[in-house]
Image 1 (cartoon, one colour):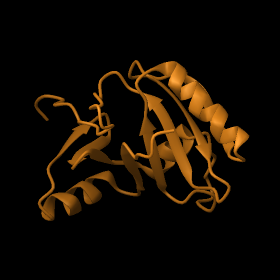
Image 2 (image 1 turned 135 degrees about the vertical axis):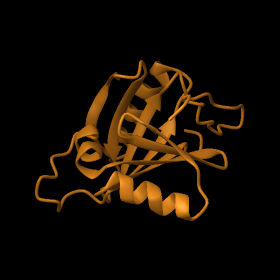
Image 3 (image 1 turned 180 degrees about the vertical axis):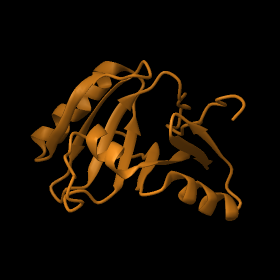
Length: 144
């Protein structure tokens, strides 16, 4: 497994408030389908509703006690790489919380928790190009 983080997704209580906060710090993001994407060097910072993020990782966090609100993502170049990394994580003692499947955005992704419960999404997203060094570029989604 390459040592890299492609995206950091923060589960937020109020998307508008969180977007305004980061923009007041000088960050410029793109809002797409109730998700905000910021380019942050060679990776992306994503804001998404906390409940939706938990569900996307295969967790039920209705009580607000079982999910830390942060998901790290490792983007891959091909769907079979997603399957291989999820299998390696399971073999190393992780727990697959969401088996890999085709996504609504035309990609392929699954999630695992490390032995301390930290969540990782492993994804192939053909719309988010990876450079040779593994850095990710947030695409231009067009007018807001």
